[in-house]
Length: 478
Image (cartoon, rainbow, N blue to C red; front, side, top):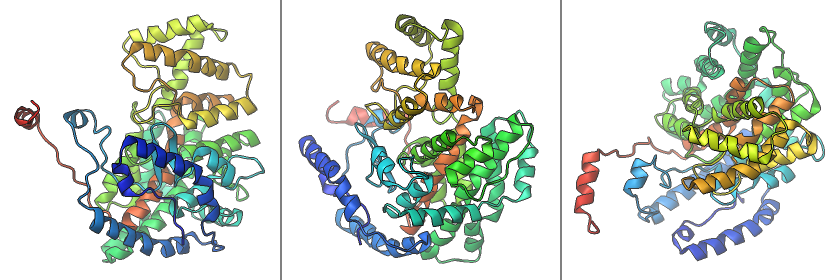
């Protein structure tokens, strides 16, 4: 059985030139891998995983026994003081981020996902359920498999009343992310993993109640998130789930947006925001907390609190607010020179231009690119979209001139707010909740594999400045 396209560990240790050759070979073979993998007719995702897990457990065991002492790189003081950037230290199976080409979900780029994953209509955006199947199994699902998973998620989407009561105990003015994290914590009462652990379940079976919790969590968060939106912005008038709609379409519907284009946008949004390898704040937080054998609800609630930070998920809120401030001060018909002046004004005031730059990427984020293509197809004349296009021309040269930015190109946040705003979801303060719903798919998929592979408690070593100073003074090159 073929699981997914892998990159041999030792190839990472070769020269840069060899790495580039290998990478080009991998990219050219991407579609061949997708076409030649085994496609099972089994519609049950759980049984698919149960079949895959033993061989991946053996794979990990072999990796540890044969290559456990192989070095992956050197740790510098800059890495320790700089947020561990560039430091390899996590196993994250579901996606891999390349600085030049962007994210790949189990080896597949975003354009490949758009082409090969099942859609709600011919030529439409990929269904998030299809990506969930891909992340968990490494296989492109059939339309029937996605349909079965979509139904399973709808069946799991029942949310107890006490969850809504917990949210209602907060002021309606509380930030939407505060309400969202509260709702997820209230869902934890029904954790199957916690119940199984208290009964003494064997560690080899940890993945099974983790799977149950994870799929239920993924199924329920759109219900909780839409309740929060309707509570804050629509006088508490809740819209029930539509049993004929898929995951993304239903989320759009429960929020109150039933146009086919908005439902397509939500499918695209959830898919591209679902996972971005394991080093970002929300993914790493979820992995870290789960490594203590905290159940998926506790782990994902912690991840949401990281996502709520201005330097992570809150950025999509800040982008639209900044773009609207440009319009308020300069008008919709702003010239390129006026826009350049406004960008410099922002930078000179000690602020950043939100939506540009990335901790890993060194090119335009492909998640930005696919949203731009969506806009060109559906809303080419929208004034805010045209302003975003001008920013794409203006901001990178300014940031390059500034000389302090490694990546001056737009990221995923630079575009999403404008699309949502166009279709009527104008409340920027809520945008990070959409991000959170999406991220449940990636974080929970990896969490299932964390338990299946028996990954240990995360415990890196910390140091003091005194230790660093003494170590560096003794270093041979000092």
